Amino acid sequence: DSFAHRSELKQAKRIVVKLGSAVVTRGDECGLALGRLASIVEQVAMLQNQGREMMIVTSGAVAFGKQRLRHEILLSQSVRQALHSGQNQLKDMSVPVLEARACAAAGQSGLMALYEAMFTQYSICTAQILVTNLDFHDEQKRRNLNSTLHELLRMNIVPIINTNDAVVPPPVPNSDLQGVNVISIKDNDSLAARLAVEMKVDLLIALSDVQGLYDSPPGTDDAKLIDIFYPGDQQSITYGTKSRVGIGGMEAKVKAALWALQGGTSVIIANGTDPKVTGHVITDIVEGKKVGTFFSEVKPAGPTVEQQTEMARHAGRTLASLLPEQRAEIICCLAELLIEKKEEILNANKKDMELATTLGRLSQPLINRLSLSTAKLNSLAIGLRQLAVSSRNSVGRVLRRTRVANNLELEQITVPIGVLLVIFESRPDCLPQVSALAIASGNALLLKGGKEASNTNKILHQLTQEALSIHGVADAIQLVSTREEVEDLCRLDKMIDLIIPRGSSQLVREIQRAAKGIPVLGHSEGICHVYIDSDASIDKALDIDSKCDYPAACNAMETLLIHRDLLRTPVFDQIIDMLRTEQRKL
Image (cartoon, rainbow, N blue to C red; front, side, top):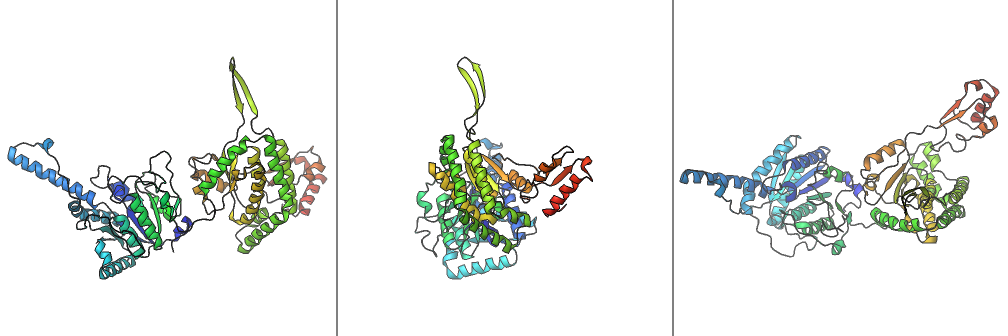
């Protein structure tokens, strides 16, 4: 079966990389884009040296041959003119229209020599294979081809495969791509698909001159890149024109991709010409990053993260327009639900705790943070009610007013930011806290919690949406429970307005690195000191429970500073005794 999700692509052992004409050809259509080709070869070599079996289906022979033949024709014409007229009249010369099959014949050897030279730099050997439609339809030839490819892969050689354009007939309409066992080799897209199924390939990467598959022709204002494409979705696609040099076009790519998918091969169509991504597009795909369009047979039960973000943004606008009393009412309702549904929450948390303990992946402080109790829920509910009262002026408050001229005043007013993405680790009580703050400030919210708290987060999110629904804005807060990587979320720069990572400093640094176009509200290392002065009230000092009540919290005291005058006094002894009684390590 094909892979159901991008993250599984890391397991791909046998991979076909298909290079379209627009990828390997220069802008003038004469000659190859050498820099682009070199970076693709480097990535293929890297994956080959990791122990994967790589095959390349390549175009480019026609372009390479056209360059050579044009040069030969111009040279020949200049020599003839010099002999007949005694003078060079290059400006009067014109190059005749070159026939594609002749160009392919002239260019194929040079193309292969180039590949051989490039792969030799990485101590990898290549082999050339030219095929036509008949090589797949004749059973003996098909078996021979299959045997040859398996033998080459066994010897750690990269096969470079191309259609034999010197003898191939021009493409004609036929009953192409009908059924599992029938596919007509009319271009390198169909060749790559047929080869992928024939060789039981795990992944087919089809590189083109567009980012992937769009719901309407790329370049139009409302065209959206399709992240995941499912069989049956092709009815909703409007195709654009073919590329300047290819013969297949996007429609042929989609048909070939769906045929390969039906045969058990995962497919991704991505951009191989963008200088910003060309140097790592293939390795990014294999690492499971969100690049291009991923073809999948397994449709997720819920909405995609892009759809969730869109829903949050839409409902967030309604949330921002509610009266402060209405937003406060939602927060109070959430506080009541935390108490009312206490048993359900604690049961879900118990499942997470048992799983975390069984797997043994979490340290004790993280397990403590994961744990919820009746006392924690009661404390949480009290905090939410306090927030509901104190936040009535959060939105629409005038901070500054300046009279610029008669009848013209400039005001600085608090407004919601938009859509927030909050990423938090094992602490599930963070979810209602952050949700309440977002509701109070009129912001839409995407929440990405840790896998270790998935059951608890799910029930807490359901209660949050139940509270939001009293004013019809249930979609304003979304829990990202799909297998999206944080890096993929950080790429939604047109939909998310601010990222707030809550967790370790390493998490913050990783997100700051990944979020190129979205502001990140990061934090530094915590400095959790408590200082007791010589004139401090000892009763108050002993009551400070910043290391006793909830030591697993990230703001629990780490350092206790005591005035030197208190050293070796009864006050000092009382403080030390209290901490030891609470079983704190000093």
